[in-house]
Length: 275
Picture 1: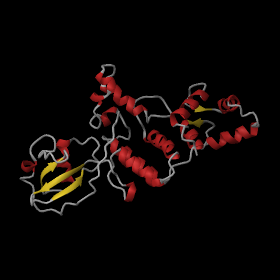
Picture 2: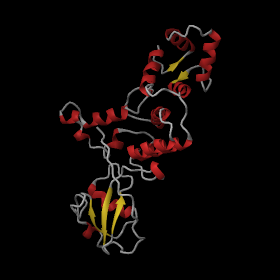
Picture 3: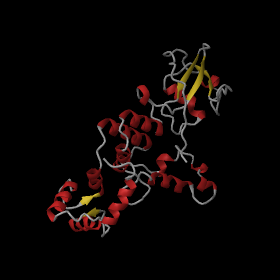
Picture 4: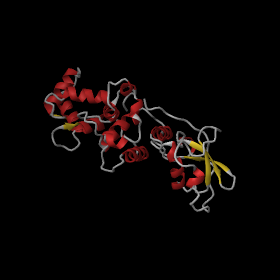
């Protein structure tokens, strides 16, 4: 297992240093030279060849970055891989299998980034910088593949022993509803809903990353909460429209008034900051 300070970006830098010809793969001579430069003087030629073959998983005579990463860290178990894939699929808004600036433009308000506010960066640059954190192992092109995303989280995973804590971290970071016990999501917004019959329940806005307050009513309807007449998103100040748009009493006027009873959920609420 990698120590916590062996970051994926640090490994990427080491790989690029070893890659003398810039081919994004290591041949035997580059690998042997790297072993010498790292002062592994006790290694015989047979030892080096054995190590090279261990990294060269597909046997093509070169070591790609993905093969290099797979060789130096423990793989994620299936539970963790599933959560990481869930986060990627949530962010991949157009479903083309790549994360691009266009996928996060409606999720994060780049106008509030300090570099944008100072006039040094454009919002497009902010989005690319954000994606570059996950774009590891190759050229920084502002596009993240599923493998690069998984490489990033595989390194995070290597320093987290507890599966429940890893799940909580992923769910809270990407606002993925669900989970059970103490690994259940605790970051999504909770709102007080006053129903048409006078009942009040606290409801979670599920998967709320990028969901604006004026969209809470529509999101609650998608979740099956049809009988809401008023939302309180401000801790008792009683905003009837959830932060903008038509009032909920108007919005729900034409909606069916019979639906499964609204659920009461945990009202605890935490928020996270992007910048």
